[in-house]
Amino acid sequence: MKLAIISDIHGFYSNLEAVLSQIESRQVDQLVCLGDVAELGPEPHRVVERLRKIKCPVINGNEDGALLSANSPRNYPTSDDKIIHDIDKWGYGKLTKEDVEYMKGFKPTIEIPLGEGKNLICCHGSPRSNTEKITSTLPDDQKLSEIVAKITNPSIIASGHSHLQVLRSYLGLTLWINPGSVGLPFLYDSTSDMKMDKAKFRSCGEYALLNVEDGKIGIELNQEPIEFEMITRSVRESGMPHQEWLLALWNDYKKP
Ligand SMILES: [Mn+2]
Image (cartoon, rainbow, N blue to C red):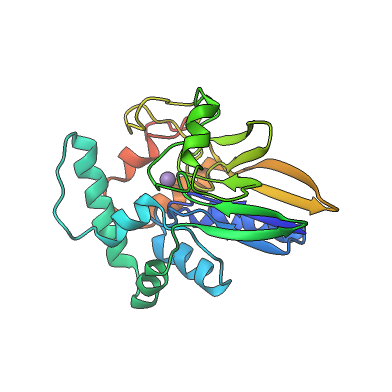
């Protein structure tokens, strides 16, 4: 059985297309998305429509909730928070009724049987919260075992949210995978809070492939290069607010 895991597309349709075409060439049996599909990027509707049409099961990410509630008032602790809210309101306005209904059906967790008693638990942050961040540098196995305490027999856990690829084992038994981010892969681990003024993104689309055969598990963490030009073009043609603010978050950005 071959599974593809994607996460954190954030409205970057050309990244999604590049990643999906790689995945298609690998003839996978199933695709799953760990959430944060449309918020912040230039093409929220096209991303949601694409996932909807291929009937991709999707986890409810924290930013999926933020996008769906974009018309509610928010506090702005920093000036970036106001900018992000402007973009969220614009993005929500681009979604169709069908998109919104589809997004409301996103699940907190999805469990996929892998055969021979093994299973894959998919979530956005952790199985208990879509804002809990599991990175490769999270220090202790104790914390991980507490996080999964209520889960019976986890073989593999896949989570997104940190936009950083992870493969780690804990207690010698269970594997934790993060496929990274399709639309906004971080250049480095900002282990404190994910503040946008510290963020830098790379021009690539990340995803994971999971191969399970005769009880053996193989995992690939992949990075598909994306032309920064293509990202720039999609942002500038979108009509979205705060375009230069957004593009300046890329490592490749040069002022026009
Ligand atoms: Mn995200």
